[in-house]
Image (tube, rainbow, N blue to C red; front, side, top):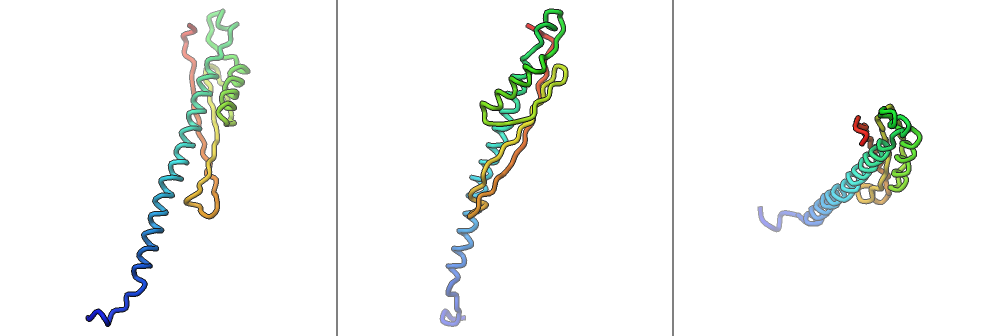
Length: 135
């Protein structure tokens, strides 16, 4: 077929638009996906640190008697204070010598949701257990 017989006008424009859209989607996956993973990691880090802070609050009266037990009110207060310093709110439960912390976080997805902004929510939990060693 001769060159004059083919009409390929606009082919380069369509191809450019398709490639640009694919690149935009890849950038969105990298940036917004990274934001989501970082938020999940930060939420888990805050939950784990809060659980460790709570499990250090032993009941001093019980410790003097040789019993390992957590002071529930102080454990909850310590965990919630740490969460507040990190900008999170969460649910703290104390069961014997175990502290469990559940937090929720959120981040905005800006590229994949363009032109709108979509809020992506994550949840994380952590548990810490106090050992028998009081020292």
